Image 1: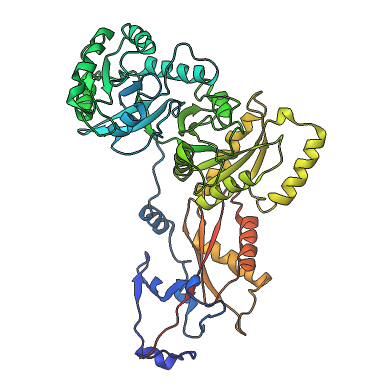
Image 2: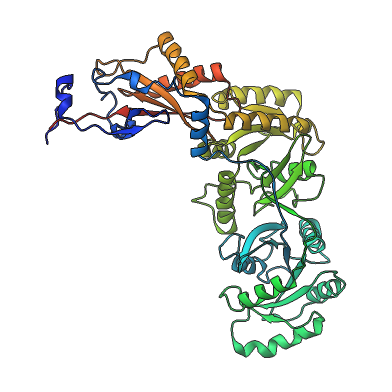
Length: 521
């Protein structure tokens, strides 16, 4: 088989192999296989249009029912809240006894951030787990210390809240260290607990440690369970015991699906945890002036004026992931995962400071993920007139490419303008979910091209054959063309697209598929 670089005429088409697929209307359409991604081709290496009948791609005859069937085929989700009666087990103990390692062992995957020094876990984090076919919540907590102050005192209070809301409590102690004063105080408190308490002696790596474990009987919490969370020893036995201790009905029902997921993102110390605590009306996240307080993503169901939302407080991104070390590295990975799992992101920027490279890096991460976006300038209560003028100039210089993003000036400390966040999120998500019919899209496309045709490449005028919205979340518009469309023209089409259809608050991706050169035998 040889390749002819000249334009094939219609007479040669009899010798070509045609691939078709059936449309929802019962007709036939040229197969997607005759198109390739433009990156595969050299710019300007377009194909002749004479052998292509654009009328074969006319979707005007499709009915609404056929489009609805297509939407179901691409997986449009049911957004009803799904409630499930799931019990909760809280893992508690003093710092560095291996609670997060035990949580990861219960989950069967590495979710909680683990590092060999005390105080890595700070918030109470809930993970959905499954054992022997039964689903339940595992709640990881920070180290508890009755005499702690400042940030450590906040961590201890989070652990106390977990103990008050759990259906089963697992207290973890260190076999190698033995009973400490903190262990004794916690045990006395747990003796008064209204729910079952299971004592786990962690770091039990050898049978020779049975004698060391015997002293834990004095805590008054029953038989200690020897476990090595690091090596997996004894974890299954503890899980069997946890499930046996679960009540028939949990303290409260859990909404496991349904609420839209909102990720609070930004650089360290920008006020993400303060914002979550303010809108949830509870001390959900540990807050401190020290940057990097939040390590794990913190989920919280929050009922705002119109809807129920699932907010996720993430760790601030201080460094590039490649250069981050220790728990900061794992925190960065989990922040990326939280963004990927979210549907809308609230990007927080410290209005009292210049827009930094870190802000730009986080913003780029959100845009690349394709999530709906709202930008909130926090700490507006610290602004003065001079700083407002500087901020306006910075926005003109650094955020001019995002005219479609809603910007809100807020103060998580005072509550200023927080009521404006929910309408902005709803608008962004409506755009994120929105679909334009192919008929409307091609009518708009003809008008946009008539007003400004694409530039010529290598003496050829690329022809845009038709357009279709391939997907939502984010909206992706695919243009089937006979030649390369440069980035500048695609930006023009995106601007005209937004002028016609809106799509405020969501990124819109313009993809181009170029007709593949047909080969002759």
